[in-house]
Image 1 (cartoon, rainbow, N blue to C red):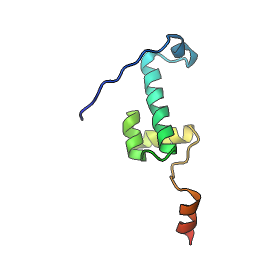
Image 2 (tube, helix red, strand yellow):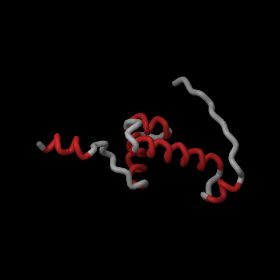
Image 3 (cartoon, helix red, strand yellow):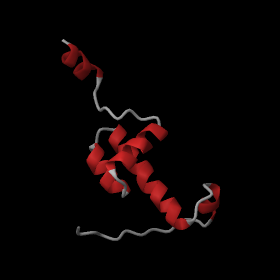
Length: 83
């Protein structure tokens, strides 16, 4: 897989605020971003898992942890499904 390295500066205090070392913080940040983008309908479960750097199963577990539905249906789509 072709990758691009992205870096940015963070205050040292953010790591202690979340009780994470830098590696754990980056993992959690990638996961949180992927979950939010999934929740907004911008990415699929598969793409969210890829962004987060986890398996699809692990991504599904993260959705539950963040209280985000694994289904991306709006009210209109649900009505169409049951009609």
